[in-house]
Image (cartoon, rainbow, N blue to C red):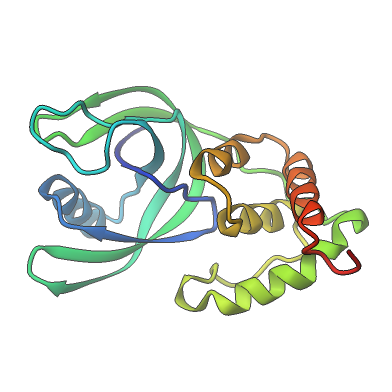
Length: 199
């Protein structure tokens, strides 16, 4: 599968929503194609380089694991600036990437199988009250319904995207292969901060 890439200093998780402000021509053109053809693009955390292209500067190098995104909605508040919301779907792994003449990055990727839906283990039930409050407060950036508070993978992804941790740490959570392992990392972090009921 070959897709355009949008390297960012942010991490998008499957099922999550990320607001983007697009003004560079290469990404304006990409967004037009994705909107017209309902095709996805890839969002990856930048491993090195900058989000905005500058003459003579090296092209941003992405981490190899990212998330497919579709444009959920868009608005153009002023000429030359496009505000969009990216809706995360499936994770992917970059096999190779290259820079187009427009400086847009393209990549050949392999999709990572969706995590199997697993019931949230009772041991992690203390995660739910705080997450319910967080999701209710997200407003337009809240994950799409239905909210799957019963699903260990969904709960872990939702926490991973809102935790006050550096992007590199979020990237590590995105790359975790097992949803229970991800929950354990998140549980230990929140429990250590005294943020869970009964702590």
